[in-house]
Length: 198
Image (tube, rainbow, N blue to C red; front, side, top):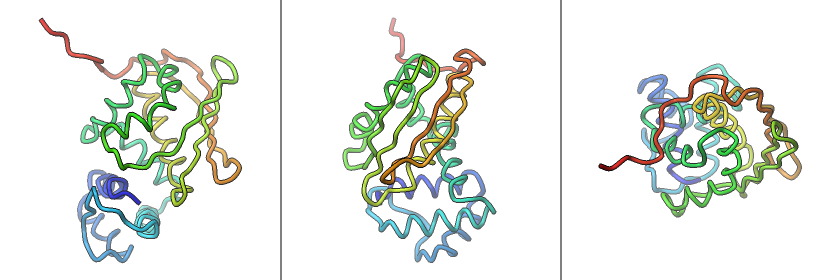
């Protein structure tokens, strides 16, 4: 598992619950270090142990914690670079959804060796979509839940009211049903695609 992913889990725990809590999670996971190196590879088992220890420490289900991490990646001021990358996908939430198939390529521009699952959006009607997450070997059960939290946070960012329903798909795929209730439900967070020059 790419170190950047593990580092994101660590930053979520530290920023949200404090360094002492992260230390207890690292100890419970049997780590012999206290901080992940962003560019080093780690065994999938290491990631699983950390996420499971985090869930145990919070008294939450693993899926809930992964979703919280996805929300953190968009909503935290400390991860604004990712939010900006995602907002370049469109001027509203529907445009953003339709840009998701391009997301792995955009991420590779920033981090060439970061693995990303293939995302497939199916439009059932103008307000109903199905997002299929095709996991890569060794990442099953991770990306779908993180992406669910990320989508919730992006909907808030755009000011859209959406209903998201996760479902297991075939062959390890994750499926997220997206129903757009109101594209202009609330005021969007401030964002500029470019900086004006005088």
